[in-house]
Each structure stands twice: as C-alpha cells, then as structure tokens.
Length: 384
Image (cartoon, rainbow, N blue to C red):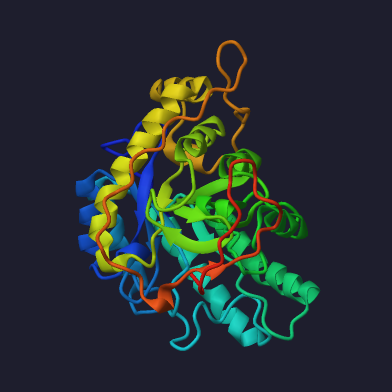
C-alpha cells in the first residue's frame, strides 16, 4: 500500500501549532463542503470521523472514494487524522456499538474490522494517526475479562497500523474501560509496549477527571502523544463546550504541547454543536490563535521550540509519529520563578442555541481531588 505524503500546510498556525476541526462537529455539511470551509477559515487540518455521511467506511468503492478525498485534501493543503467515534456507523440501535468489549466475539470482530478499514483509509490519506477507544464495559462483564478482550481485539489493529506506518492513537474516554492516562499505560504494557500504539489526548477529558491539570497531563503524556483533541470542559462533567464556556486555561496547555515537541494536529471536537458547526468553526480558530500567541509570548521553552521549528528541523508528519524528546518542564522566567498565567482569550460569541435535553452532559466522578485552581464538579445531566 502506498502511503500518501501529508501536505505541508500553506497557512500554518502560530508555530509550532497546527489546528484542525472535527467533521463530527460538521455533520450537517457534505464532506467536500466541510473541507472547503475549514481550508477557507485557515485551519491546518481536519479530524475526519468515518461515518455514513463522511467517507462511509462500509459503503462500496471505499478505496476509490478515499483517493478522491486524498486529492481534495492535497488541493486544499489540509492534514488529516482519521477518527472512529461515529455513534451509529455499525449499529443503528446502539450508540458506539458493538465495541471491542462485547461478549459476542462476532460483534467484537465487527469493530475490529472497522478499525482495520480505518487504518487502510488513514494510510491512503497520509493521515498522522488513527483514533480509537475501548468502549464501555458491558453489564455482567468483570474488569479483568474486559481488559483481556480489549488487548486481544486491538492486537491485530496495532499490527496493521505498524505495517502501514500509521500510529494507532487510543483515547481515554470518560465512562469507558480505558478512561484515564493510567488506563492507557495498562493497555500499553498488556500489548508489550508496541511502537505503533500511541495516545489520543482529549484536553477536555483531562479537565473532567484526571488528577493532574490539563497542562500537566500533556507533560505526562508527551512521549506517547499521537493525536490531540481540544475543547472546553468543566471538572466532573463530561460535556464538550465551546471555548470560553468551561474552566480550562488554554495558553499553559498549548505551551506544554510545544514543550513536548508535539507537532501533529490539535483538533477542535464539538460533536454536539453541528447545528451551528460553521459558526463554531469560524470562532474557534481565532480563540486558539490568541491562546497560542500568549503561550509563545510567555514561555521561554515554547519560544525556543518555535524558533527550532521555524528553522525547518523536522517535518510535521515525522514529528507527529515520533516520540517527543524535548524536556517537558514547567515554563520559568529568567530568574527561575514561575510566570503568572497569561490572560484567558476571549470566548467566541454565543449563537443563542441551547442543547436539547438529550445532549446534556454526563456527570463523571473525578479520579482524584481536583488540581490546584480547578473547582470541584457541579453535578449535571447525562452524556457526550
């Protein structure tokens, strides 16, 4: 299989950041319209969720359709990460079903087949990574059995990813078996620490339930980062929010990403905002650019990384698939003191739309006391 070379973006974000937007937040647009919109807005890439309306992975002529999308991405200068979080692509009645944890081996095989298709699509698109997640532990399944099923199901997918030269980036998802960074390391050890296995880090999820702050999560995850998703969120509430509506301070997060040497896509994920997707895509990128500028201006570590990047040392594709080696330390001023956090970028203007009751957030029990400066959770309704 010939792997497409990812394009160098024509309009890079503030170096070394490369921002994208997820098609799961543009579900009401045709794929070509969504890609054109993102290129016109100045995004560097796209998080492409394989779904019935966007490069359906189960429809006929997948290879030919993938080639057409690859040509379009090339023409627009967009990088891409392939995501596999479509809610009903395999089963019209079960959200995210079947999963890698299902009791029925035939059902697990259907999810594995989807992931194998995603790996092939990613290779043909020249994607930086393939995203996946574990799924929720089924009722009646004990934890040890669930972990055994997960490792066995993912083993052939990791092998396929290695053969294609595309990292498989597993996402810790609140409420799933693999829900935290610690759980990712459990899977990594169970599979023998394969080079092709990496991490999708969702910055909002870090705020939601990790014991570390989002910036410290980035520092801890640095060597395994292959894909990053970003949105606002509140402590203990799994609800993807537009920037400025949650509790996250983004400049320190972006400074940590730069210090970790991450140069893959950082993709905005607002899957429950497709009703106003173009609006949120329009206003998310300026927010991130302001946060990135603030991160660069206030962090000597980030400034040094920026200078090295602009000197042309490493291509984005190589950096996205190579473990980071840059020291991930807390930024300090010249006299050794930790600088004051930069001002939070302004929130995008609201649309006035309110999520329906079925789109309410899931209350999640944080895994430990919130980090300093992060408020405790306020209980809320149901899921993301």
